[in-house]
Length: 628
Image (tube, rainbow, N blue to C red):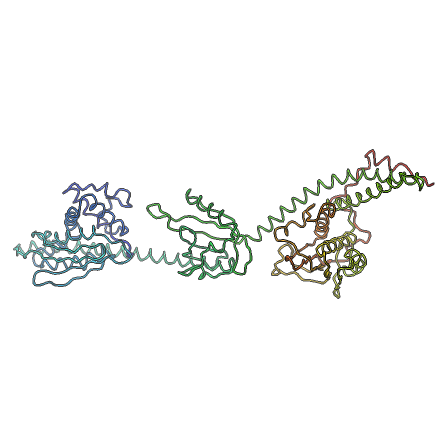
């Protein structure tokens, strides 16, 4: 029997007290996990607190003396019946007390420690101590006092005299039993009665043995399940936990916490433990606490996503799924749950959202660019013809030339929009990236200006890649221009090209493992603030002043690289500079590359031609210039 449980037969006295004193049994056990039909089952167990609660209710409603009287009824139950029958002729009264205290009491109440000592010829002292951490009770001590008084009555003798120093945890009883009055019975009658009693006791002993075996098997099965669960918990990649009702202090933590938080389980356990709330990202604490509180009030499973700060300062996203654990009274005693690292999942969701935004903006940009390009075609055609028709000294010639130049700039912008919308023909071919970078060095030098030191580092034995050479050149120029704008007072710009093998452990979650050629553009500029770092590739996003940038440079560069099957990575630190890495996959085979290029868009669809049937476009293209 687990030490926290006692036999329900300890409540059998209630029925006799009900019959004798009118004790309201049903009201006394109301709301407790007991049924009165189980009172006589010696194999049925109840928590010690339930027995104590019944005694406390009796004493609170009817007083200490009524509790003692109920205790005298306890020794009239089935447990003492066979003791009375065997001891009826020869046994001394004190032997009955010893049997009750050292045989019956320990089997019924393992939560209690019993002591015995003689006190003169007739009296003796009994000490009862309720073991820690079980609940102490003066009411139960008074119940026992009544039982000690009533034991002689099972032999047909007057009650014993009992004085007690009652306290909730430990009580000392001085017991003076009545004089033993010998009774004579026929030997044959007594032997027959004793034999029957011994048979009944043997049957009870066998029943108890079977009960102990069944309970031992149940305990072993429980231990086996606990062992299995412990192994499962320790091998779980997630963090299993049990914490206090306020969620701050952990009681159980699995080894999975090390992989997620960087801390071992021991960091969250013990008196000097780190409160788990301290590793939650500060901005996410209020929302996490509100969601958990609402779920606990509704007694629902709480599922919450929030950020944590690992031991190394890394920010990670986690999914926390937990449930409240309640006692028999409905009070919250703990929260049990599991925490899973979902950082990669959140990154994928953000990338998917970014792709959807790009797709929507790209469709809009492509549609606008088509219409705008047709209008510009008419403007360019008309201004070309006007410039040919106007004399060189005509006063309107300068205005027409300005309009022509503005239309050309607008045409360049529409080309960027069409490229971003993937509606401009691409010409992928086998490229030597090192040669391409060297080929645009002169342009790059003019782009960055004389205040910035430009350096290129080209690796040896570079692998070939497949991409649109013109678009890739534009990517490099765009990155160099952005680096220049970040170095207002001058600095250094380094463009490196190298081979790289990306494995599963590199942390480049956006790239599949494989071989890549990497173009790395590093500057010593002002760097990018963390709060805008995730938006730099969004179309039309720019931190430049009006008229100094369109916000399409990095967006179109990103689209070009992704179209080539690659990826752009960006690292930046405010005040230290920025490093942009362009990953292009190594060409698998040169035989599959057509030197004439492919007239397809990156998504495999046919290229959508410009709408030449617009009135302005058709009119301008139909007129041939007439030289003067």
